[in-house]
Length: 112
Image (cartoon, rainbow, N blue to C red; front, side):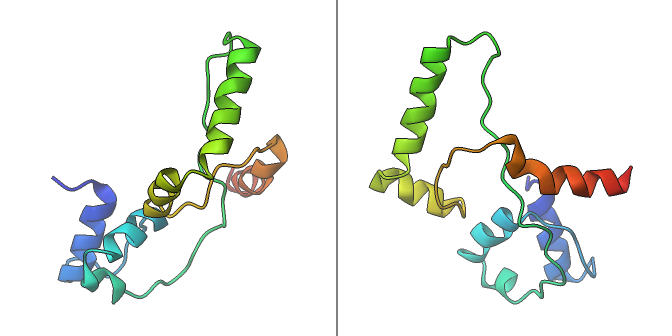
């Protein structure tokens, strides 16, 4: 059974819905195999937003955490990883700080 975003796309394509909120990665990936998705009109885009962070246990050894972080950052240069990232509509892994998430915090502050 399709997940919510795919189901929303199916319903817009079939005319059961006039519009739906759909994750851009889901839409981009689906466009590659379903030409009818490419014919849908994008009404509005939100963002750009940083993607979800990769997280680790708070008690993870700092050296091990640094090794994992370094390996992930280096993996963006690997051709096989580049293909996987592209398939997910991503460019690569980059180091981030809390400041990268300020746009999300600001947007959420206006909602509350």
